[in-house]
Amino acid sequence: MVADDYVLLREGLAGLLERNGFEIVGQAGDAAELLAQVRALRPDLVLVDIRMPPGNTTDGLDAALAIRVEFPATGIVVLSAFAEAEHAVELLSSGQRIGYLLKDRIANVPEFIGSLRRVIAGGMVIDPGLVQDLVRVRQGSNNDPLGALSSREREVLALMAEGRSNAGIARQIWIAEGTVEKHVRSILTKLHLPDSSDDHRRVLAVLAYLNAATG
Image 1 (cartoon, rainbow, N blue to C red):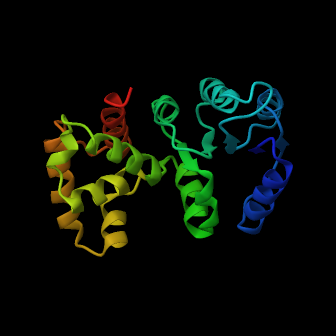
Image 2: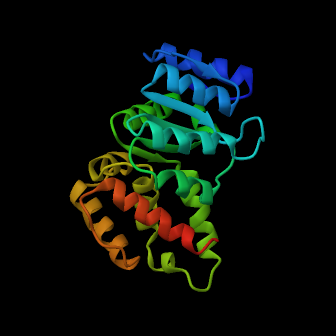
């Protein structure tokens, strides 16, 4: 299911997904229509703009949260033109099969399609632009716990927030998986976050921690 009030973007997304093996069961131009169609059609994945009619504020996000409550097994990817930490954390805290991506991420089709498939498979995807934005904010603070991180650890942190496994991070930045594991342990230690084998919990923990000082 694709939901966006801009018809051209909505149709473009639907066509892109169909060309990459997805079946589009419905489209919606506002939050109420989206909820009605999800209840009737029960899609496996919903793509929704964070700002939609009727209010054009957070109606898409509100619809996504309602879908999560009613249909927790449905994958949800919220698309946003801007990195909005508060909205991202609220959505991502709702569980697995969830994603928050900036709209310009669509331009990288293989990465975008891969992100959607990770969500359908039960994973979580957080746009690296969101983490980078939060990191920049924290760097300007005199009480910045990220100041203890090396440049490589910051890079690993951003990839962690995308929902990548240690193996995926290793492939992305061309280092050994064992080295990634050491970086992850160091990051969690420096941020005073407990280590965990649960990738989703560690991403939520990192994002919630980063967002805590921005509010």
